[in-house]
Each structure stands twice: as structure tokens, then as C-alpha cells.
Image (cartoon, rainbow, N blue to C red):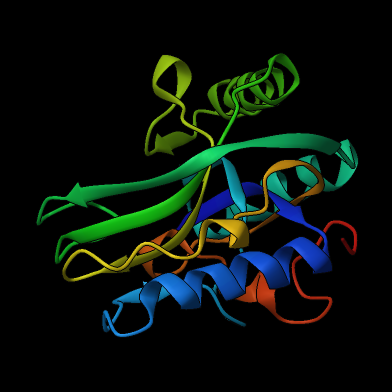
Length: 185
């Protein structure tokens, strides 16, 4: 089972990012974009663990009760090759890039240490390759550039949560009211 520790923005930023996702994906027939079952999040760490070990991760995230302020760098579009773990069909990723600040990096490393101490296998880019971001969506071809005033520039608060990883690296259970949150953002 793929399980993750993530940072969730508050309701205002969630709405803004979801609107941005739909503005970019409009007309591009996206394979994935933000919505109720794909809330915006910043992945701290994804793990491949047996189902019965997921409670350990959820307990760790809940005990941490971490809130972090993050800062947006900008918008990124990147081709994803076929066979990618998160996007097996390939496509064009579009997302918001986040500054890798010391407190976010320390949280990532603490989660890595937690996983390593328990023999849990990590998924995705970790350690020196960790790249904090919010995936807005994936399209089969290059989507349009949105009005740039839609991009939530600057800083915003996030809250640590955890849950099972769904299609395209989403967290479907975190999009449902009260399910999977360590605290309500």
C-alpha cells in the first residue's frame, strides 16, 4: 500500500489552487486535476508499506501536529515519460513549486528517519532529490498558461496530514470532510 505524509493548505488556498488547476486544464482534457478526491497537498514523504503498518505513519503524523508556512516559487510544466510510477501513461505535469526551506526540509528528513528506523520503503524523490510542489494536474498534451494573477504567490499556512496515496499521487480520503486529517486545516 502506498501511504503518505503531506501538508494541506487551508480552505481559501485550496479553492484558489483548485480554480487554477481547472483554468489550466480547461480544454486540455486533463488526465488528472484537483478536486474533491484530489485535494492540493505538498508531499512530505510517500511510503510503500503493508496495510497493517499505515497506522504507524498516521500516528506519527498526528503526534507531530505540524503547521508550516510555505512559499510559492512559481508554476512549472514538465513532460512526464510513459511508465512513470505516478503517471503511467505519461503526459504534461503542471504544478506549483514550493521553496525548499530549512523547516520543510527538516520535516522531510524527520519523516525519512522515522521510515528508515522501521524499515519502510520510500517512493518518489527523497533526500537530496526532494522537490516540494503541489501537483495541479496532468494533461495528455501541453495545457494553456492561465492568467498569472490566479497563482497564489507568497506564503501560506499548511497542516500535516496523512493518508493512502491514490491515482496520480493524490490523497482521495483527505478530500472528504474530516477523513484522514490530523487536524482540520
